[in-house]
Image 1 (cartoon, one colour):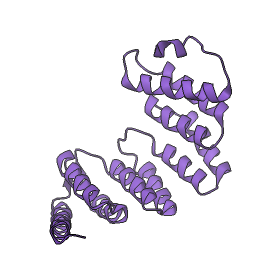
Image 2 (spheres, rainbow, N blue to C red; image 1 turned 90 degrees about the horizontal axis):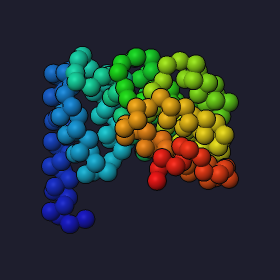
Image 3 (tube, helix red, strand yellow; image 1 turned 60 degrees about the vertical axis):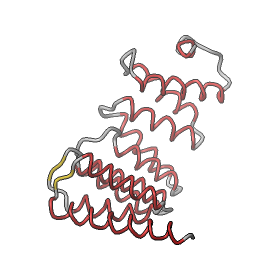
Amino acid sequence: MPQSWQNQCLLIRARTAAHVGSLRCVAHVTREQLDRLLEQALLLDEHGTLARQLDTLAETYVSGEVSRAAIFVLAAEEWRQAGQPAAALDRFQRAAEDGGEVLIDPRAGIADTLFELDRATEARDVIEAIGGDAWNPATALTVAETLAAYGDLDGAHQWATAGIAACAPEATMRDALLRTRYRIRLDLGLPEDELDALLA
């Protein structure tokens, strides 16, 4: 590694460590602070380090513009990227238990991680539980993509279709669901229908 790049990495690490330390003291998390932490860690490409920093941030959380649950979800994703699905599962579960505001139901992450851990029956039970509660289109998209990835195309199609029905006509999420549903229908060998035509 060139010395200049090595020095830059050391500087970024120092700034990141100082930033996390300041968050420990303040315990009030702003979106700007979190974005800065994520950007710094992205430069280092060290998912395990970022996951541990997010764990610390969640554990010392008092208040903020981002919920503790959302921070646990970010930590879970980083643990998955670091090749630690068991740790990711724990963080998704803690996010669900926290109950704070999140874009996507953490149980969708739980289900996806359970599939990754070859615990398919448990994963399907979690998805069934999500379906029995209130859910939003972003959660429907995540569940559809998970089921498609693990071979349940019929279930994925049902979730994508339901997600579209729950969307406002001009919602960005609706386009993502339409595209996902279209790909699923191609894999199922189904003909184009009226929802597919909306992609034209």
